[in-house]
Length: 480
Image (cartoon, rainbow, N blue to C red; front, side, top):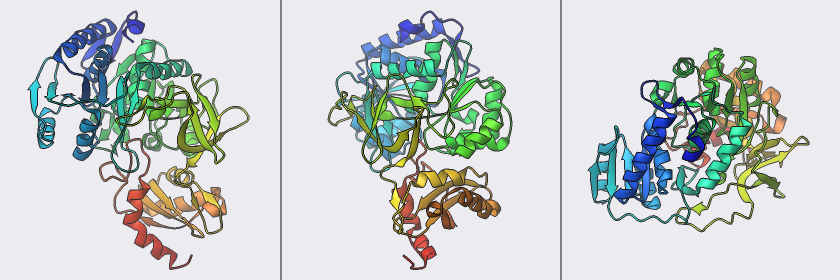
């Protein structure tokens, strides 16, 4: 990638205080690449808050032809321990050295610590061994919905293929000012923010997450995020539906925005319409880690609200008999310590959907989440939840109704006094078999911290259901 960005000028990476021009970036990457190669490191974890240095280290690891493993700050100690063992990480680059020394020590690892560049520590793990497929450049871990995080192994070619498709689809240029508001440890942000902006010759702003209104695993300060957009005069960003909902609720225009991609979880059509009314240039997309992030995206030239856009140029799609979306193009090499993927075959995404007559992809739900009511009607809970959470009174919702005549929602309220009205408005739009018959208020929000949400914003229904099962069944009053 360095050869492709070497001709760019001006600011490459910045947090508003520390900046790298493109020339400085390349010099720093090359310097650290040499140090990493001579250090004996092979599989390197990055455990840092967003910053320009994160981008430098990521590029240096790739340039040195070593394996990069982003370590999400929202992972629990148990999840981090699993990832370190699973990937065979032998070096951790971190701004939390004492935490990782204690974590690794608790794992029985023999560790040593060195400083060799910038404001971070290098912690070496003695005796680690990688089991990634040959050609792996990055292992990205997602918390998934059950069990330990799974390591998706990607090569440089797949990641660059997606980045270049996004570069063209978003019409990115050297005049853009990209603001990173999601953790760089997530693949979507890593590729869609860092790589795309650098290929375009744009300025990528990477302030600490607290400065853009994100705290902990899923705590949002929309006003702080809006101030960050204004401060950096951002023209581009990627948001999850929850972040978009927070900004929309402010009803505050952001006039510098040119392209606001939205993904990671299903988005309500009404939320998108409200965003457009406020002048937000929102473009919904769809992807998954096994396909190196983005598969389809709405664009300025080809846009249909309610769809997740047309497949990117490198992607081929087909559909199974049950509607499952099958994808080929920029596929992973395989899972860490698992069998290699057959990149000549189509990957089953687990999502259901269809292409309309104009070639736009529409999602209908997660294949394994669809339930059947007692009247024999199929319901994708994500569809109902989208209609509930578009109302400003509802922050989150989890819908259940397997084998029942009507559905129940577990609701995390933003404004408890208006939830009843919000449910009524959603029911007016939904067909009778998908409507909410009764609802209850959750004990806590659905968070990554409490195991009730995945890192990409999807609900962990297997974790939520046992907590509310008795109360849900009581609402049915024994009626089947």
